[in-house]
Image (cartoon, rainbow, N blue to C red; front, top):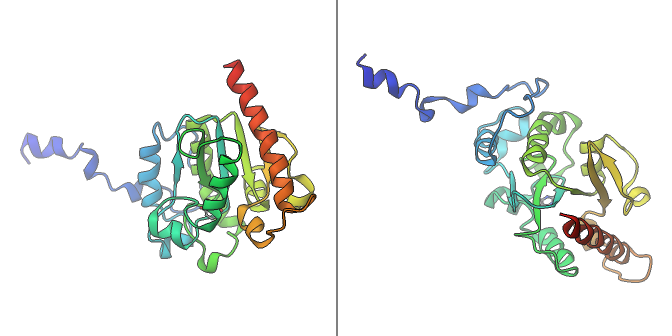
Length: 226
Ligand code: URA
């Protein structure tokens, strides 16, 4: 082997990324493994820590501003997300964008959006506890990298996946809670609002309007102080 060949062994392209990721979802990935979202994304695209990897077209890691003050965490990619590799691009995503726009928050600059699991569950079923646990190190790394001041947890699965709190979303939505130094608010998942279109006072949509205004007020307060 000449010296050029030997040196080329140290080029990144010669590492098999898959070999570097513990394929047993029960073995965690240590905190601060990733220094950039690009590295993390490469690992997610080669990840086999749970069975969801078998049917994915794309791992759906996240989108938005990597320095955003607000992180929005959903449940799991759906069909369109799996096809495009981007979270919240389907009907739920369009509604989420409208909700943000209603208080002048912009999806591309003010928020970073991701999910509890990065691969689409079959038939859009809820991810299992094992799937959520296998994927959680990636999410914790994303939180470490973005360092959001506010985390919005959309729906009960997002709340459970992050905090372990199993309470129903109707009970806890709109309440600020602290988790690992981050201010979190559980909110309804946009797909729930699509199934409940009433805007009557007290309806899910009306409650979301109250919640997003509270989020915007906190965002403005934090922006004024920084
Ligand atoms: N629902 C989610 O929770 N996440 C997505 O990315 C799309 C729909």
